[in-house]
Length: 300
Image (cartoon, rainbow, N blue to C red; front, side, top):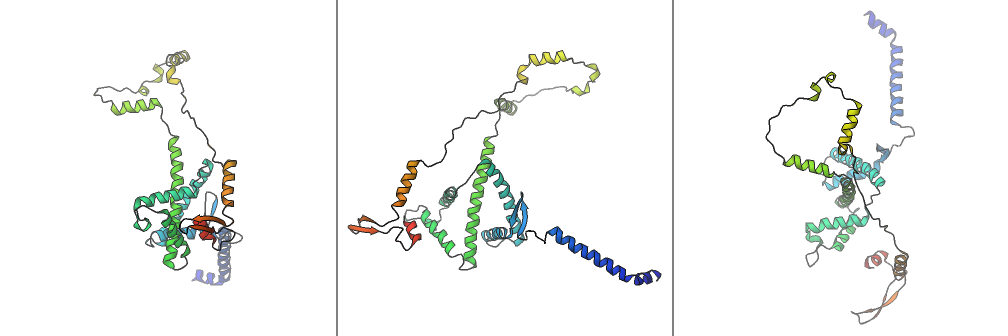
């Protein structure tokens, strides 16, 4: 009872102490999380690079779309983060190595994959995969992405697939370079072959050298020198690798630039061409007078 009485007498001090502790906790939490002046749009950091909320949310949506919304939100978030960690770390190494996978490389790989699947939706009359039909399909996905939820998911699924193909191509190229740099010497190959193919039945007694007291053996410097002289091959270092390469810079020549410039200039103005179907000369509309730029570039 005396203790309870003392607590009641000093209750105001206890309230003040508790309030100060809570205030310190809240203030410390604010500064720890960086509410003042920090980047609230960052969900984390990978290799020194901030990952924005918008970028991360879009990647999560792409993963969910590709799984047909079968994956839970937690599974999609974890998969998105794991993909980003792998991508960002590889990207830093790809930049150092000078590895670049262009849009045409990605497109060729996608076409190659789809050609082997035999989807009748993208085949022509001869039963061969038609890239133009697939281009029209992708253009339709892009144009209709705002039409509804399913259309949006279909477009996000395509973006995720395209990104995945590019990432896999970059990683495969990098890993191929690493594997190409791993070489074994002829001696290592001979030893591997001998160990794999030599079979013996023997009886032996093993006496480890460390079982012999060092005090019983005295090795002089002259003996060491003599041994090295008698076994020079054991201490000879051979070159580990010999590389020969030729570098070709992918750069347009002045003739190439002039030819491209001439070709593009011919698309600007209207021109007269003979039409076999019409059996007369017709006027082909140029870029300067066309009303539909998208159709113009698709046809030319």
